[in-house]
Image (cartoon, rainbow, N blue to C red):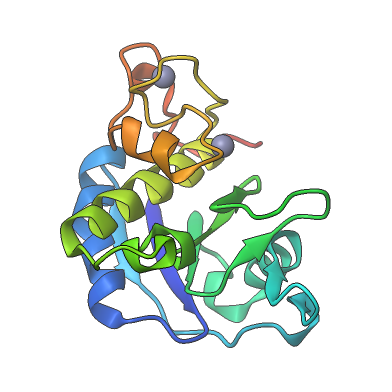
Length: 178
Ligand SMILES: [Zn+2]
Ligand SMILES: [Zn+2]
């Protein structure tokens, strides 16, 4: 089982790299960083100054970079939304997922930048969305990475790890077919 991380649009390579080892650990998978793909113009909503997460995910799934891969995580710095929602931190499909770094930085909330806080949030969101692609649903345990989060405070409550219920349900052994 292999996970490929794909930057969508301009993303700091160092910020991509920091996801590599934590994801290897959480999923016991091979993790590699693929070639950057451009931001899909069709996903942009100029009025909202955001990108439609569903369109981004589809674009990623159709990309040559993800062809033949077990799992792909698209990583972007632009702000994502879904119709009917103000924003989303990320979105998962059956095999692929996308996350946005946009709202994970302290500067977004008018606070001084904190690399450690940013890194922790990025890992939590990456594990959460990939967790969905490995068959996991949302979890009620407030410390579990699979807990749904709607605010950055909720993200910060969670750890990057799975609870004891979710952990054995991570299906990385073979293709899950879902
Ligand atoms: Zn979720
Ligand atoms: Zn859990």
